[in-house]
Image (cartoon, one colour):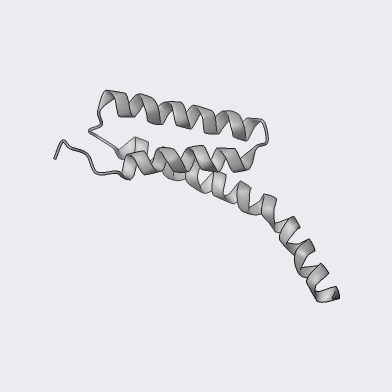
Length: 85
């Protein structure tokens, strides 16, 4: 029983660290991809920049889970195949 309680406590303590790491990693990937992306449709670029701003606002507010989610959505849009070629 003590082992279960210890595992549960460790899981709760690790959750914020994981969210922070996910936020940080996704934001860094997003910045890197935005810097190297040469061709992008204007409407897609606006959507990605909006998601990045939402992620940054969430990070500033301390909501690291939402930050990671918005950054991940922006990354998915960047990684999606385009119709241009």
